[in-house]
Image (cartoon, rainbow, N blue to C red; front, top):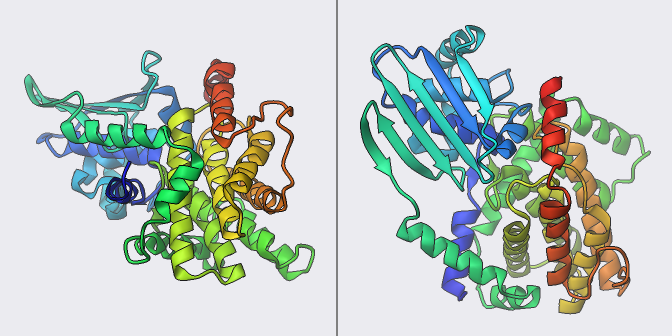
Length: 427
């Protein structure tokens, strides 16, 4: 991968998203189908892979007091705005909610797990009196691969040339070492990476939302109270924990503000960005250093997600994104390649195995815990305090640590998603 490919990957990978990405994906699929329907929609039938179902079941929806994929699908049908991509829920109105409610309350919407689908998958079928429209999204949250109106197939694709090119770039990234990624990022100028700061501004605004608005179960509000009372120190660790918890709780409660995503997910974006940006401010990092480290953290996040998979039985927002943030913090604190590797090893021996039981406001506790671990792992690493290679699943190199983490999730926890999903659906 060369510098130009790296910059293009970052531009595609670090984009705004409004709402938890899994309900957004379902809404987007439904919006593509809804745009084609001329008559009154009588039913919506949605099939998803287990990961989409699990992560969207309890997630809040922007501009809506309801949660879940049934509501997301019904809202998408009446929005009819797939051109807004991951920000389509910004246009939810009272009229759209009233129409969606009629379908959901009338039990006209069904959402079912298709157990044969192992990767990201959403299929939405709309039926009116004389129409049937089908839309399918695969592999990425915005990747529409099939669209049919009655018997007429309007779109059918496997892998486009653009997608093949994207895959080639990501595959080349996955073959690099963490040190090689850092060296490549260091060749980019401040101007070339200036767009990294857009994510800082966006996610800091999201974190500030709970200062004036009640969100979730009160995690951010309570953290502020404890800091003001002096029971928690007003130090870098507490600032990172508060920023990350507040942004995550607001987002997953349906806050109407966008987040800057990373590797296909908004929560991953705020977990990558906020710990790094808070650390950069605390140490007085230069603008060039800040944007380079942010870019590095996003790329490491993409690297780890390549091996772990975007939707894992483990919390990839912590395992992938917090680990990437720790690597970035270690660089900010003056760490060399070996010490950045130590940070990843420390995270490997700390956060691996945290379960993913869907997207919901409780994720604020998970990601703030992961962010605290990221800071601690980096601080230890730059002082040459590293977990031993003989410890558990830790390894000599950061690359092997990452592969071991992925192995635990992909092979060791192969049946975990089924049990988590069974517990959630039984409720």
